[in-house]
Amino acid sequence: MATAKKKAPAKRAAAAPRKAAAKKSPAKKAAAAKKKPAKGNAFRNAINDALGQMDQWMDTAKLKAKQLAAEEKLMQKKAELAAKAEMDKVKHLADQAEKWMRARLKSDSKKLNALEKKLSKQLRDTEKKLISQAKAAEKKANKAGKDLKKKIQGTAKKAPAKAKAAAPKKKAVAKKKPAARKKAAPRKAKARASK
Image (cartoon, rainbow, N blue to C red; front, top):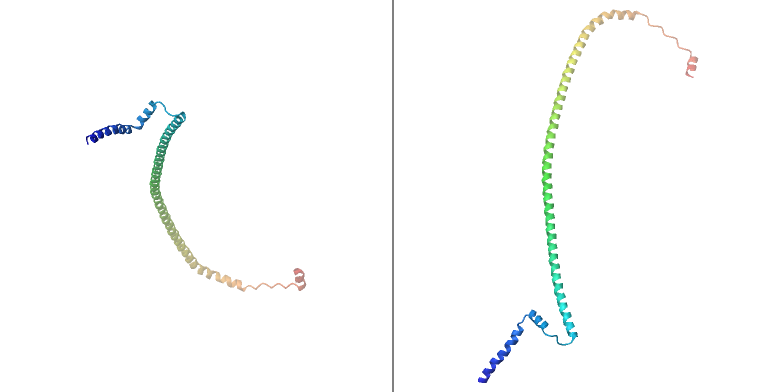
C-alpha cells in the first residue's frame, strides 16, 4: 500500500505539465511554433503558410463584411432619417397651406360680405330713387291729367256757345243747291282706257 501511495503523487506530477501545456493560448502556441525550427518537408510548410494566409484572409473578409454591414446600417438609418425629415417637412408645408387656406377663406368671406352689403345698399338706393322718380312721374301725370281735364271742360263750355252761333250758318249752307252730277263717259272711252 505504501508503494501505491508513492506512485500516485508521481502520476499527478506528470499530469500537471500536460494540463499546463493545454492551457496555453493560441497566440502563445503560434509564437512557440515560430521559435521551433521547422520540422517535416517543405510541402507541409507551404500548406501551413497557405492555411495561415487563408485564415488571415478569412479574418479580413469577415472584418470587411462587418464594416460593410455597419455602413449599410448607417446608410439605412440616414435614409430613414432623411425620409422622416421629408415627411416632417411635407406635414409642415401641408399645415402651413391649410392655415393659409383658412386665412384666405376668412379674408375672402369678409370681402364678399362687404361687397354684398355694398351691392345691397346700392340696390336699395336705386330702388328708392326709382320709387321716388315713379311717384314724381305719377304726380306730374296726375297734374297734367287734371290740367287736360280742366282744358277739356273749359273747351266743352265754350263749344255749345260756338255751336249755337255757328248753327245759322249751317242752315244757309244747306239751302244751297247741290252740285250737278257729271255725265258718265261713253263706254268706248272706258274700254280704251282699260287697254
